[in-house]
Length: 252
Length: 252
DNA sequence: CTTGATTATTCAAACGTTTGACCAAATATT
DNA sequence: AATATTTGGTCAAACGTTTGAATAATCAAG
Image 1: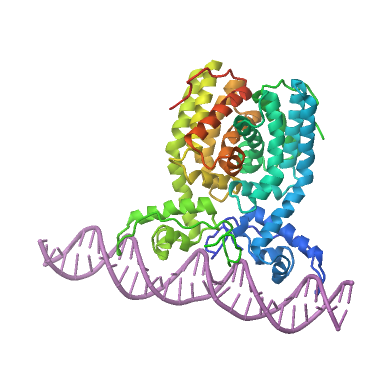
Image 2: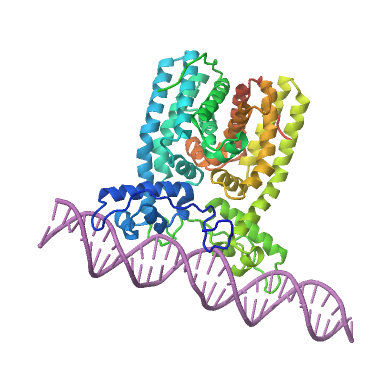
């Protein structure tokens, strides 16, 4: 239990004590579909913070408060459990990103060539995205999980790309193309979209750096608002859009 | 050797075949400090692409063409080997980032309030950084290694922060502060610097996305130049700096 | 310029533990 | 009774680490 001494055998790089997530249950057929969900939820959290190799089936069974055999009963192996975890993750983040993307698409279509409206919907989108990505209510383990997939894509990356990344990039592509009056299919637009989104995601991906440099130790609503308020004018400038006056893009 | 079937026991998530890196050697005392370096080099590559848990001492010994015991003889354990790998990494990337940072500092100091000069040195810095980060000659495994540390900091993150991240952010902070005529200590500047650098780094961190969206399969010099040429005007716009005319910031 | 002890390094083999997978028995639900 | 789920345990393989002998370089003594 001592982390300061590195004498442990087969120790993890950054040991994380397993957290109790579910209450104890009776024997026999207590969980049903419930324990399957519990395994999936715990698997997501553990994979997100330790990676695939950092999570053992025993760690997982302990965290999910189920027997070791139950995991293999429900999912038939660790690799397939990971697959199902990604499947679940994609479904889970849909309701969080879907409305933001949909609204951006509608706003861009409605804005047409009106640069003030384009600026306003850009600001709204960035603010919503920061809130979704950095805010703590939902997407707690999902974002680290995704960032891990982006950096070290597994066989499931194609699913994430098709179902979640492409729609987001396409929507932002429409915005950037409208702001620059350019064809959304241009490689230039693809690059600028990536820089656009990367600017936002880097605050989630490298939060250790942000916290160390800004003297924070978590993303509070105030911190997130400060980040959004600071970055939005910069992004508008990069797109050549006029600054937003006041009280624009506050909420969906 | 078949990756499509998930029937392996204790298999890695993304299996990577070990690559031969060094030639065979005689017995006795052949390597000396040489085999120590070989271990360190292979450890960096393997840790970078598979993470700490994804690398076994046997994998490493095989890749470095040394005996299993030699690793513990030289480094006294896996955890300490990781520590030494980070130490070496910091020393290795110094010559690549140091001149870029130093030149940026000098250029910013020389530019003063001249916004054209600020724009020119910004463009030069961004181009140099893209070349260093995405270019393939050096920093091959170093960047993925660093990005892994940023996303999932270990005990060694503080070293990287102090020795490599802080100087870079401080230098960019001076640039951004000069462009906005603001105090470099402002939290706003800290945030903008992070967005600035994150914009660049995201092309390395999420290269799987970039390649999939742009239809690339590697970063060629032409690709890197296209990225830089596209992003630089955008960054200048975000800083409110004038566009660079031509042939600025091509090389150090 | 040969010796012989000393040191530094490599090697094969094993240690005990943990891993993912698997099983037959037990238990609760239908 | 039939089905679905949980249980405790076993398995071979892989894990990080340790060991002791073997081998080559080093160097003082002769």
